[in-house]
Amino acid sequence: MTTVAVRASGVAAGYHGVPAVSDIDLEVRQGEVVALLGANGAGKTTVIRALSGTLPLLRGTVAVSGKTNPGPLFRRVRNGLGVLTEKRCVFMSLTCEENLRLGRGSVKEALSFFPELESKLRLKAGLASGGEQQMLALARILAAKPEVLLADELSLGLAPLIVRRLLEAITEAAKQGAAVLIVEQHSRLALRAADRGYVLRRGRIELSGTAEELRSREQDLAALYL
Image (cartoon, rainbow, N blue to C red; front, side):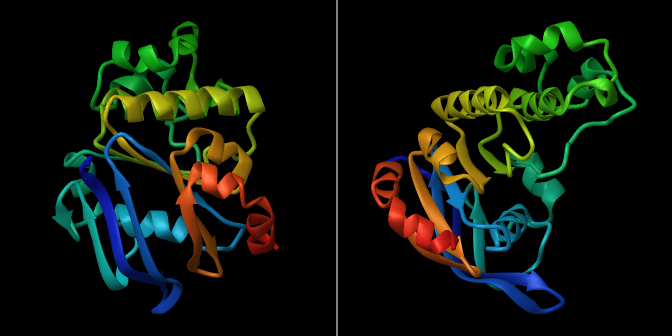
């Protein structure tokens, strides 16, 4: 059995003391991609924030790379966590190359995931397309070879071709041993790349299983989204 790199046990988290998600039990093992699915407002981003340490827990525990409740985000990143938020994680006034140099991995390693960025290295990130900015942010994270990757709304506002490239890179990171949790509203898209999945509805996990099992329960998925 591969090692569990991320585990949430009985987690409740929210805002101003009011839970937005409750009784969250999930795990992600090394070398696998797990999809966290659900409609808008289901609590997906809240779960990511709770796992990353940017949102305090109201109840329960989170373990990342063997450390239980391992402190704020910067400490988790130092211990091998990579986080891609739903917003563009780039410095717009810096060039693409400068953005990559700010990461913990090399530019060469970053380009191994996205060779198409090589021609954009001298371009300011703010002038790159949305898809290029997302590739840039993900390349910087993956170059550091994180043990755990949390990716929130990977495909938001992007063309299908770009999304396929992002998912290919994430799948490659999992093959190299990373534990990957992707948050995605579009279930079909996510389940093509994922090994397993959890489906949130109104802040609770209503369904879970292998990607194949969830794909075979399309009607149940649709009911949860509605």
